[in-house]
Image (cartoon, rainbow, N blue to C red; front, side, top):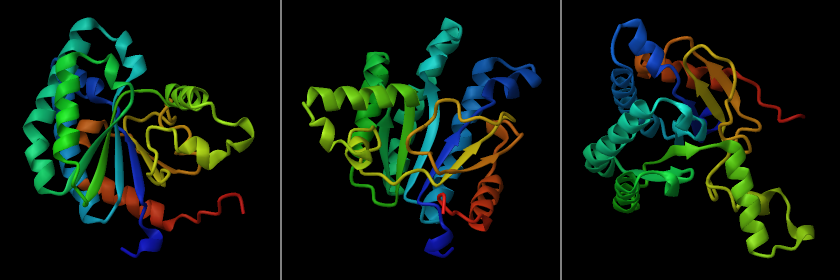
Length: 230
């Protein structure tokens, strides 16, 4: 695919794990298990297509309001998946980064994710942003706090300076945002970075999302005329 029509940064709102499970009379956590498995082939495909950054919404700050047993189970699944697949990510040249307020997560989850970050730091094939305990508004607030703490000159703060204090500092803005599950909204995800993103929505739930669906979204992106207000 020519560079001119390839998205540099693809973001995914992987929605519908719980509904996928309930429609099959399965425990909610079964949907999250399948949701984690659905990420792996997409990561490989993004790398093979030459996409620089893939961001996946795994746990939002609003998800703390779910039942305690689901939240605890989800943390366990994330911890287990990170431990299980870090070697695979290293082999495939994928660099893992955490995007969000990781310090609010359980200590064992923090250790696993920080360990994955460290072990994959040399990856050059793809940057995988695990958006964990993430909120777009919280990210903007955290960036503003960092600028205040640095005693930044208000007159010197422009968009580029502000972006340097976001979780995604140094990464390209989102070109393509994919959402599964049938809803047509961005749900507080990468609000700053996705200001000019092309949006592609799928009715299927995330566990049913395939590499073919990912290819279809990238192909749809390539067909669009991106004018950026011009």
